[in-house]
Image 1 (cartoon, rainbow over the protein chains, first blue to last red):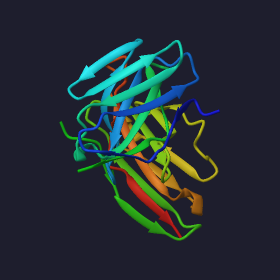
Image 2: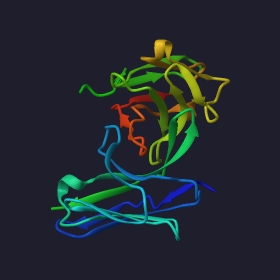
Image 3: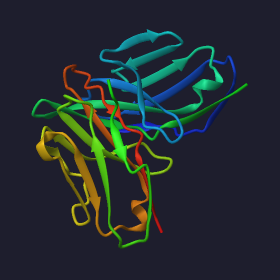
Length: 114
Length: 115
């Protein structure tokens, strides 16, 4: 079983809609939970990360973690065509020697239609 | 701050040929990662370096893939001989480990097509 599961979509929404992206994870040892955004033919870039259960807000983006159910969510308010990208959830695990590993989900491809 | 540099951006080879990818991480970043991203999938870790030592290479197909990070800075990933299933984007990332969240900064990737 893959450690981070994510529905690959694709997901298509009209401009201005609220978008909900979700992941589940299986490893209780995961410490940080991240969302990366990847535009076509680019590397992933970090959107935001959280540590504890609860919500974290950054502008139009809200990340939510529920450790009891091992559930990770990203909400995008007032979605824009520029938000069209693949969104990757990821979790970190301490791998020793002062370094960490990042395990990714498959990514959800989002299209925001003008 | 300059980003993570990778080259070449694109490479097309025949199966059984060899290829090498180069990565220059962000200055001062101790940890360097190589990920493989197959079309429609999330990145999969191939190898992780801490300075010039290997932390994890458990998912690296060692019969055909090799990687090195000389002097704890630049890194090279080599594939020899290549197979059709190696067609993917090879992403290099680095992190400074100054934050517990271990934020990775990725390069744009090297896209490999094996014919």
